[in-house]
Image (cartoon, rainbow, N blue to C red; front, side):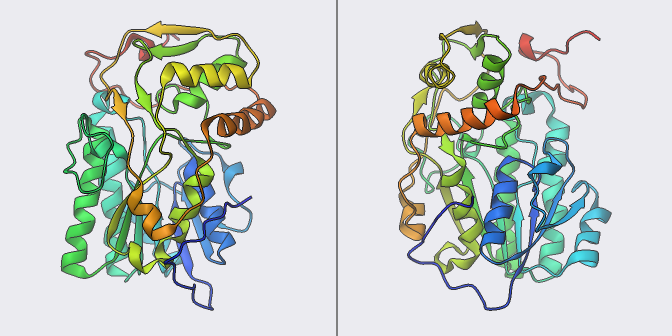
Length: 351
């Protein structure tokens, strides 16, 4: 069921339904954003390449178009066959931050070049608002709590690609007048998350391990800290952002406030599944140790309800996961471009 976000500074939607393009719409966050857009009365065209999403996540009320944003011809066809669009919500990406070090070219083709094909069309066709989901990965290390006025210093190719799109949106606004809103969400979890992805989404990885009778894999000592964000605290705000005048050409952190260590997260998950806590410590990987954001700015513009606390959110997701059962972990389907320093647990299993 779509979440509730009653922003204090949100404009009333136009009487006629606005047409919106949502990329990554078969994925976790994208499918929820598409649902929220539908709930707002928008006409939604949902697109995805199904590399990490599932068609069952897409509402029957949306117009479904399968395709790859890395194809300029496909992106052009979205406008030719399904446009025009008042709003573009760009959530399509390959978001395995840690793996991005080892798939650098793939990362930039997927997260940066594909975004430019989309932005080119948005500029050419006079889109009213381009909504982009970036990431707190743009901040890098040592800037907690992360605030929007800090200068980003990304430390991995994923964060670099996201920040490059942010910079290009600002440049496009200056030259062409296209309006945008950027969100930097973090550690989002909930129903529809792909728990089979072995490289990202620690909550999904942990829950899949528990369901499969395995220990939860922890890189390093588990004292890394993150603020985990339940999906209903994120998707409604993203969907409403084009209707908010105060969100025009602004960047917002988005998500939960309270950080927890990875070991504390593991404890919550074992409790939700009513199983003993069992973790397997793996060699530490190259990652930001502590990452959590300040959300004062998004609260001023959108006045969202209090976020779902971790225990409640984990238990909600656990019930959904139990209903769907475990999934076999899926390896990255492309080429590992740089094998040096690749974490041993990410090396391909022999055929």
